Amino acid sequence: MCLAIPARVVELLEGDSARVELGGVIKAISLALVDNVAVGDYVIVHVGYALSRLDHDEAAATLALFAEAGMTPALSPST
Image (cartoon, rainbow, N blue to C red; front, side, top):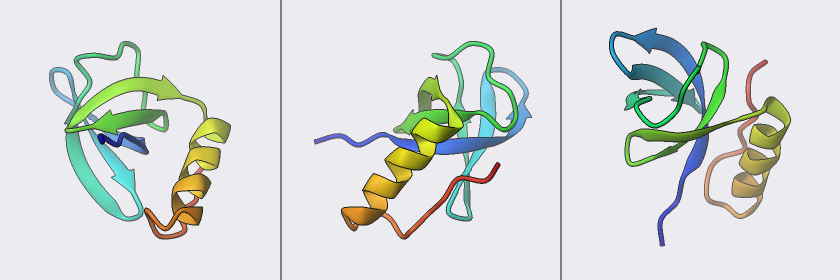
């Protein structure tokens, strides 16, 4: 089973790259598969690639479900 998780874009890098944050962890990812991403957007990340954008409410609901299932610590997206 594969798992993709919402993460917030905190910095756009050169090319098709960005830094994302989730629960204090910051990681560089590729934006090659998603257009028009801005700092503050939430993206679904899988194996280092953003697969799609999602809105803040959807990110919050997904992160809450992951926390409830014990898959992540209790996380809430920043505004």
